[in-house]
Length: 102
Image (cartoon, rainbow, N blue to C red; front, side, top):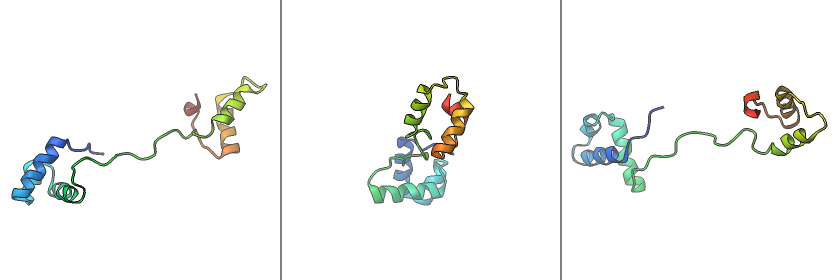
């Protein structure tokens, strides 16, 4: 995934676009489509800030802490990490790798 353009570069692209339109993107090696997107973004939102990248944040185990705590407090204190993963799958429907638990 490409990184977001810096604010300075975004401002230069948009300023050039206002004057030269299509050649603005090429001038800054940003591509014509990217330059057009920045200009439309400025018109629509009034700013050039990049949108948030990425998808799901947080752990797969969010909400499973009570089960992990209960398993840690059980009589069988020597449970293997693989057993914990199997139990999470059986009781919570969570498929996790052992390194996620460890």
